[in-house]
Length: 275
Image (cartoon, rainbow, N blue to C red; front, top):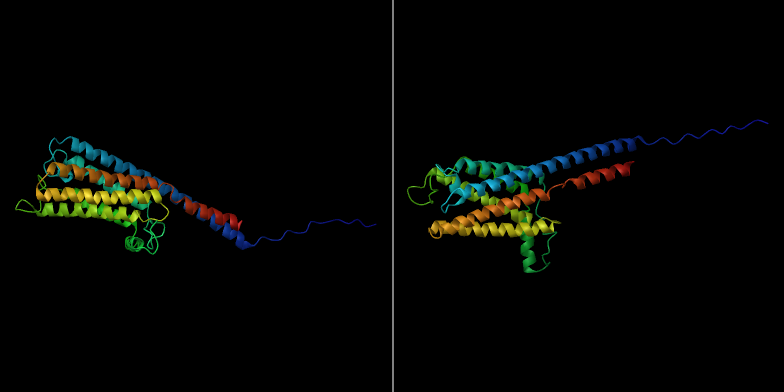
């Protein structure tokens, strides 16, 4: 009787496309993970630099025993000029790093992610503001503010930071004042943009509060300066507004930590699906 030898049937060949998709997916995971790590490093470095900058500004202010506006700390001839310039440069560097780490952060253009009532006048206004502020990213506004602060740091006001009236006001003062004012305006826009970002409730509340506070406090301080009344109060208000603005940038940097994890998770899921 002939013996029967069973031979294992050959296993079906795996489609070549699956292996290719798996390899591509693994590459995507690696890239997403690397991007997350770089973003995290940029966010940490940016927040650290802006924290040091804020400390330096307060140290510079503590060395002046008379009422001054923030810009006067870096005016020509002031003993705190070098320290203040260093602080502004740290703000610029920190702002650019935070902007890079949080790139893509944008206001919900249709008002999505906010609690505005639909169909109400307030809801329509909120959605309109979201569409306007969502026309460009938060990072774009931060980069603009950083560039303007860079100009202000390299073109300080003259001794005493004269008001934009009278013969003592020079072109140098005009460049510094214009750059500083526009930098604050761009920073406020960035805060308002962040207050419309979908899915980031705490960041929205903090950003709206900070943006409105900085705009009102800085405007009040500037008005007191122009009217030449309460300049001691005006200087304090400007310092408070500066502190809030830099503090918001620090928090924004911290809030972007690990912001790329979603991309890495999605890439990993695609690998599992292709496996």
